[in-house]
Image (tube, rainbow, N blue to C red; front, side, top):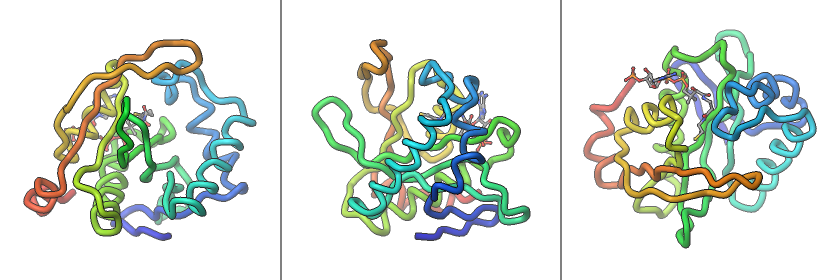
Length: 181
Ligand SMILES: CC(C)(COP(=O)(O)OP(=O)(O)OC[C@H]1O[C@@H](n2cnc3c(N)ncnc32)[C@H](O)[C@@H]1OP(=O)(O)O)[C@@H](O)C(=O)NCCC(=O)NCCS
């Protein structure tokens, strides 16, 4: 799997990406929605989990690489997620802090949503966002998503209120040209 955007390449993560990805996932500020920066072993396990997803589902969180420099700056991709009793297709994104505010998340995520609608038989693509995570909400809004419901996720013994954002296939197909970066 390889996606090219004007400034980014999205490709499958490998074990060799662990140190670069850890610059994002090891940063407690980047991971504030999870309430802890990852230990290196947790980043290793995260990459292994994505590699399992690539082989079982055919998709997962992919590495986000700057085309100009080849630097891996985070992950973005499509996963299957549970929202209460529903299994949904979700776009997710985590970028190293020194690359925020340059439109990379929207650029990467938009291409992932395009990929999902082109490849998977789904009526909607979701983004699960913690109710305190304004940057992530703004990415979802820039993708044309609207908020659908509230739910609680329990993670590391903490109840975390979340919002489920989503864009339907029909809205995406109608709006996508307008939403171009
Ligand atoms: C969420 C995240 C990926 C956004 O990355 P980014 O590359 O800075 O986002 P973009 O530059 O594409 O900006 C997208 C929109 O979000 C807004 N935004 C970005 N950072 C913001 C912030 N700190 N506060 C409020 N809005 C913010 C931007 O202004 C932009 O909206 P606009 O175009 O209407 O101005 C990044 O903040 C991140 O890695 N956060 C930590 C990981 C995380 O929480 N992931 C989501 C888990 S659900």
